[in-house]
Image 1 (cartoon, rainbow, N blue to C red):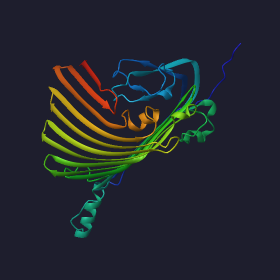
Image 2: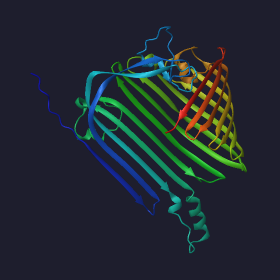
Image 3: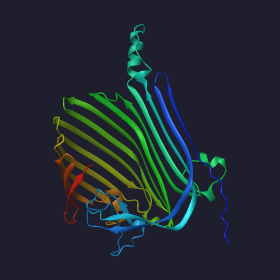
Image 4: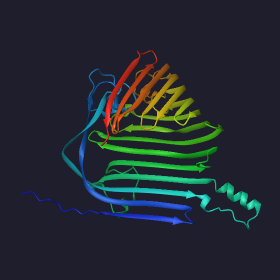
Length: 382
């Protein structure tokens, strides 16, 4: 006779909101603890027609093992994406304790430094300058730990990914400092972003981390014409417990100035040049350098139609093994040499709740053959 073992669970939720200094500082955080069961998961990839999937096969075998997650990359924008991932559950379950933390902090100095009549001109100028700054920070952590791997009460305050009992982990962080936010003539943003995740499968864990520092500035040159400068510097990492030949640790930096012209309220023309540098720091030490020119045109008529046209030319200098997984990860599906990518999309309103959507994408990566993918669908909104 089998008897069920009694268990103890901790379930609860705490939420706090603060508004301080005349609404200068607003904070909100939510901490929740739950218990549940997690089935042991396996993944299988199902092949579809080109352009209809979300994953691309990057292995070298003609008959791929459809259960090897490490041989597939998520890239729904690639016209060659022809696999979808299906989760397979079995009868084995793991009891888990789950913790979740959501936190946001917003600081608007324009509500604190308010010029007053009795203040001196110097102090008014200083307050006016400080009032142009604002800050926004968001963090979200979700962590599931097997019941057997949970320690004492302090484990419910452990938000790190380094835990032997970890089943799944997601961490999203975003911090941005604004100057002149919402100003029509000039604004500036500087900050950092980080995404962490771990998935524990039957064949081991899979870790992904992307962290970057960014700067974005916009200047209105004349009416309807803006100059925008974007730059990023960061690190992109992937690690697998079993298949470490797929691991990568890529340092990158990107600079992409942009000219944005709006000839009318319904149209926009964007010209962008971007320079990207990638360097793999482990295994083959591959490198890539990219120069990209983009022309984009958008034309919209409210409640009638949207038309989007984009043309890209990308020149790539890549040192490393051709047709390898690291080549795909560093070049995002493109190839060494000259690359051309173009796409056209149109959405036409047929009736009050009926839309016709037509999309076409062409791609000429390096010396490979040109790829054409066309799609059409009718969407009904109820």
